[in-house]
Length: 455
Ligand code: ARG
Image (cartoon, rainbow, N blue to C red; front, side, top):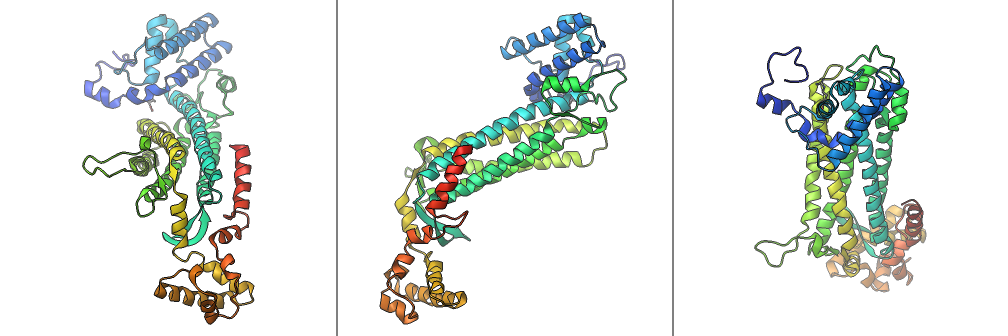
């Protein structure tokens, strides 16, 4: 018979039990569940709510249960309703009536909120570590490519010359913001809900601050209804992860393009590519495609959580059990994506020459050509128009700006002199953009150095 056999006359229907149970996914919080119970038992004992000797037995046995699960000696019973019931039932099996004292002044409602907060705090820490790893790889690659000129794009049309390092550093900035967001969410996750009990706290003289200290939380929740029914921290994390996935997806998309023969800016290592079952020549960027694809399911998890929460009255409702599968799926997905992307970036080959070749075509130094005339005194709009005509002339004659003779230049405007050639060389176009945030090697090296101090 179930825990609530006093009220019930029948066992739960088998299929309904499966439907109702969360053990298949909340077992992964067993450590936090046990740690939370240990802190709770210590508090009950300190406050004289349960006997000291019994409390010691409970703490000792809970530790044993944890070791036994760790070692695989104790198997999680998939028939149990959830991890909280499983641990309590095991404790009672081992200690009899003493085990039955643990759940005093507590409910599974505050227990699950506690477990989840503890679990997600750990996960957030891991995600930050993984992001830092990714940043390290990008900084390494950037450092090797400070002078590697490539076209910068807008509308996927060649626009202005930049360097590969500058391009990679854009992703570093995104991942830094991702870390900041996670750190911020951590603060709001770091609040201890135990003591809210089912919804309205308890009549026992509990010490919530003590439990908070024992479990390393920063604060305690300030309203018991909110304490058991707040899942903002889960949604925040899911939204942070969605943004990370969006960033991972963008870089994946670029990797996919760069691998194509149309670009051939990079080649992925064999260990991070796949072949085709029919086309012998193929080398496919499946990993990057999968990251891009998995972004969709993580967005789905976020929508699951938002929708699940939007219509439920205070306080706890069973709908909220759905939070775990969604957030755990997001976490597992983003982790594997980052773990795979890091070595993929580390081992990819970079074809600097192809980047340079692409940069030489497409008139990406046209802005610089116009700026040349502006520096000679022309208004920008006038210079812009002249260079537009020059580009049109070049296209008709199938030449680049560098291939124009000085006479040809002069036929468009008399201000052109021999120094135009050095002014529109790609290297100069890049190094001239020497403002904070710009692609010039001076600026990029400075930013890399700053970031290497931190990451
Ligand atoms: N397994 C439940 C969950 O994940 C634990 C809380 C159950 N509380 C309840 N009153 N049925 O949400």
